[in-house]
Length: 114
Length: 116
Image 1: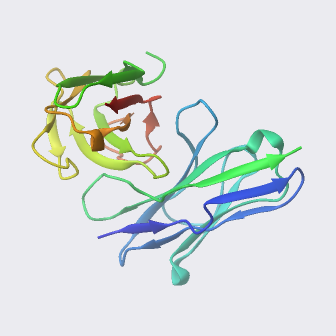
Image 2: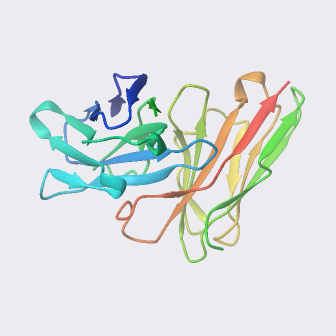
């Protein structure tokens, strides 16, 4: 079975601070990896995804994530956060099991203070 | 439509009652997914449709939960004999055929179900 761990449940940063949200997954085979974001009052939106190739993936709004296979990690980063980045962030994995279901982490609530 | 539409946005029901939650996916998306998100948790997979058929229903928690998609577009999630533990936000997502997760899912805004 596959699982996803997000170690930071609630992160508070000041504007312009750098961000790194941890994501570790448990699955022995090939995986697709995703970060989703949910802004207050809005639906889940895809931030970025990794399928193969360059392990450093760039997404929307200046976010990026790095896939480190040896560490089973897919951490999300942003050099300088803005107040508008306040949201909940979810890491998700889909292992190549033939199932199309995503397994999500429990999420990290990011609060950016102006 | 432009996005995934879910109705109602909120539903309050009494314990033991039957509820139906509706999802209208993006036009042309043949894959449709139902997830459930409890407070403080990430979405949890329930069921996946490819066209009219349920390709994977392994996430349905028990036989009180059932979903249909008779014409390959709109889907209805049905919950019988609701329990307080069923309270959650029920999310629907859709994606184009074939590529699976090539573009990720597009999620709807969800139905917040409260069982009292």
